[in-house]
Structures are given as C-alpha cells and as structure tokens.
Image 1 (tube, protein in one colour):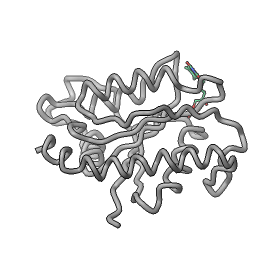
Image 2 (tube, rainbow, N blue to C red):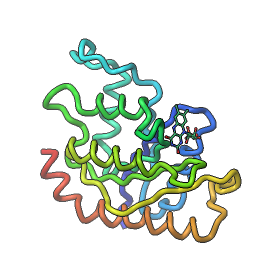
Image 3 (cartoon, helix red, strand yellow):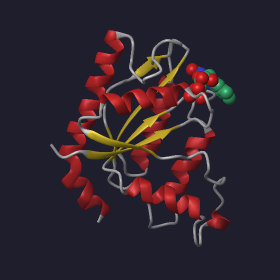
Image 4 (cartoon, protein in one colour):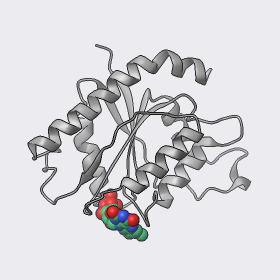
Length: 190
Ligand SMILES: Cc1cc2nc3c(=O)[nH]c(=O)nc-3n(C[C@H](O)[C@H](O)[C@H](O)COP(=O)(O)O)c2cc1C
C-alpha cells in the first residue's frame, strides 16, 4: 500500500504539550498507512501583512510542508474556548499571500486533548469552521480526548485499550479518506 504523507500540526507551543504527546501516539498508530511528519508552527512570526512580499523564510518552509502533505492532522488544545493563537497564526500564514493558499484541497482531521471533561470540543468546532472556509476537506465525527497523566507512555503507546482502539479507527479513517479524496485534492489545488 502507498504510504501517504501526513503532516501533523500541534496547536501548542508548550514544551511538555499533552497534545504533542497525543499526536506522537497517533503518528505511531497510523504508521502502517502514513509517513508522519511534524510541521512546526511555534517558530512562525506573528502574522503581519507587511511581511508578505516575500514571506519570511520560516513561513515559506511552513507553507511548503503543508503543500507537500497528502493529509493534515490537527491536534490542538483549547484556549479560552477557542483555538490557541499560535495555531490561528499558522493557519493565517498558510492562506497568504492572496492567491497562494497552501490549504486548498487538503484533507484534514481534527482532534485534541485537555484534562477537562469536554476536552477541546469548542476549539475543535471553531477549527472546523475556519478550515472549511479556507478550502480544507475536514473529516466528520468527533474525537475529544480527556487526558490522564498515564494515557500515553514513554514509547508513545496509548495505554487505555478503548482509547487506543478509538484512535486507531480515527487515524485509519483519515487514511481511507485521504486516499478517496486524493484526485479531488489534486484537482482543487491545480
Ligand atoms: C490561556 C489558556 C486557556 C485555556 N483555556 C482552556 C479551555 O478553554 N478549555 C480547556 O479544556 N482547557 C483550557 N486550558 C487548559 C489547557 O487545556 C491545558 O493547559 C492543556 O495542557 C493545554 O494543552 P498543551 O499541554 O498541549 O499545551 C487553557 C490553558 C491556557 C494556558
């Protein structure tokens, strides 16, 4: 089977991010179908339209990594019941300059974790709305993961059987969807 290129975007710039931990576990679970690559966003400058011509080197690197991914997986925390500023900043850079939207036609899935019971649900809804508006084809369904300290072990394995099964099905579904939408994605990006 052809391995898809999965770009992983973590919506946190925290060193010990629990969302990065979850993303590492998902990358491992999807290893048969995807070749996973983390796309950093914490080094991007704050978006400023004055910096667009040409975009800064780090932004160019970010845009090219998004463009070369067959699918994108967003794993994000929730900040003040929305997406963190660092993630919105990266999304905005991806759309610019005008006419060079790196997101067009990309297939994506959204998940996230927090210690709270509703675990990122509001942030994920906001993210879905934004992604839809900028031309991303977002996988349906819900994946709100409540984080416990022992959920992901030191080898990036999910220790809870039911959560692991759920996440495996989630990442497999993204692989299947990315395969089905590949021709549409290519057509939309052209
Ligand atoms: C500014 C700020 C706002 C937050 N707002 C929320 C929130 O609205 N909902 C929530 O579930 N957690 C909220 N949290 C707690 C985060 O879920 C928690 O810090 C989590 O560890 C962040 O994920 P990370 O470790 O991947 O950065 C907030 C944290 C910060 C720093």
